[in-house]
View (cartoon, rainbow, N blue to C red):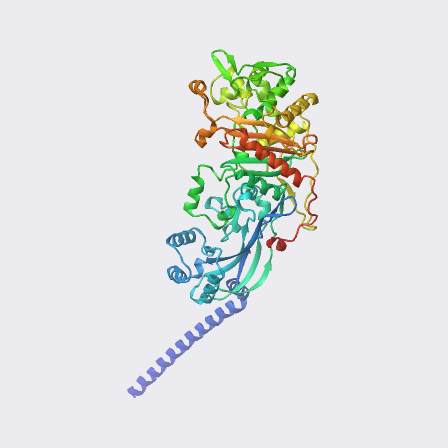
Amino acid sequence: MARRDEESDRSKSFTRRALFLAGGQAVLLTALAGRMYYLQVLESDRYATLAEENRINLRLVPPTRGYIVDRFGMPLARNQQDFRLVIVREQTSDLDLTLARLSEIIHLSEDDDTRIRRDIKRRRSFVPVTVRENLPWKDVAQIEVNSPDLPGVFIEAGEIREYPYGATMSHILGYVAAVSDKELTGEPLLELPGFRIGKNGIELKYEQSLRGSAGTSQVEVNAYGRVIRELNREEGEAGKTMVLTLDANLQTFVHQRLMSEQSAAAVVMDIQNGDVLALSSVPAYDPTAFTFGLSNAQWQALINDPLHPLTNKSINGTFAPGSTFKMIVALAALEAGIKPEEKVYCPGHMELGRSRFHCWKRGGHGSLNMVQGIQQSCDVYFYDVARKVGIDKISAMATRFGLGQLTDIDLPHERAGVIPTRDWKLANIGERWQGGETLVTSIGQGFVLTTPLQLAVMTARLASGKAVRPRLARGVRAEETRELPTPSEPDFESLDLNPAHLAIIHEAMDAVSNHERGTAYKFRIEEEGKELAGKTGTSQVRRITLAERAAGVTKNEQLPWRRRDHGLFVAFAPLHNPRYACAVVVEHGGGSKSAAPIARDILLEAQRLDPAVRPAVPLLADASDLQGG
């Protein structure tokens, strides 16, 4: 009986445990079913979206950079196809292994490895980092074949900037280069691998117009992040095509003509509308080298070059104008009431206080009027009239002709130069103006500093009597019709000069070039109807001592290059219907005889090409056509 009771208790106990276990299982199954219902039904849309976001990536598509063309539609800066190797950090589990495998296919130097790792640390993990640009097709094929062993490594087909004219246009166009850390603004486009922005010249000045806006691409990726296919693509807005006032043919001629000198600059302008037809500075540099990235050795060679190839001497180089400044002094004298027929006797020097100021011609010029003073470039004549007129009126006239101030041309880094006044000297040097400094200023020496562009502007204003202003950007191409812009002729304000005074200056500049006693007679244009009117200039870079004068001034040819005088020449042509103004500066050229023949050849070529009146190409080709040149 006791045994039956014991067995009955055990049976009841087992039944209760089984019920508890079954109940627990039921609760767990219910909870699991509820959770599954919650995830699969109530939260299905949310998780479907998350899954889709993991499967589909949205990527920025860099815009096509706008072209830069000359006034006739010739491409000066364009784009060519480029294959770029990139790596995405978040898509490779072992960066060291991936880089090691990659280095077995293409050579990666220690510098490359350091740069890649540095860029990976600086960028967000999903941002591609450039490993190598401008890959040859052979390397592209090898990397694609080995892609399963290179997670996170991709080949991207993009575009890279090309400059067909090389160094000939470098100081105008500038160049593009990779975005530096200090240039990152948070704009995602700037963080794209291989993306480049303008760093100098027109590329920098009109960066926003040339850059365009980014597009987007939706791509499907697998579990490893590798792209399977592109689902959707929205192209961005390509950069605008910038049309310049330049004539590529004239620019090429000017640059090649300057190459005969170690360091020089020249500017050619259209007198009527201010169009800069050519602007050159030598030595120059190859802008394409910046596109691919300079090595440290290449960069050091450029910045340490004593001839400063990175400097655009046309707008950034400042030089004493020498005797090219004498027309300004003459106009100030005429406006002050000095008669052009009044004569000054030149014995070869002038005394002022205890100082003696010499003429360039040791024996003197004898008696000269204003036209003769300019024709023979007599220093004593201008010492005399400057002493009568005073520095204030000379400086005011120079300012009216655009000297000592920015021209606001469409290029960065322009320098203003200096036209000294009494107040300027007191503010900058802390001393009062001296009478002898007025004499030195009258021959374009002393504190006076101008740029070649300013001298070209001065010459255009002398030829026209109007406040001509230079311009380099002609406008943007109309994308709908692809027509080149034809800006209207600007109506420049008058300089408010007496026409009779201006006629005297024209007569004098004609005499400089076309009369036997003129200082530039042997550098004249002899072709009828194309004659030029000009003015020579020599800018001293050293002080000539009394002992040297007594023994005989050392000729420039006998001096080291850096101690030789600068040579300058300004001119306009044709003589009787001025259309082209030109200024040439030859650094340490030994005097005007180095600059005058260059200016003559340039003005003759400008008239032969006649870009100011030659009709522009009515339609510009598509970018695809321009790609092939």
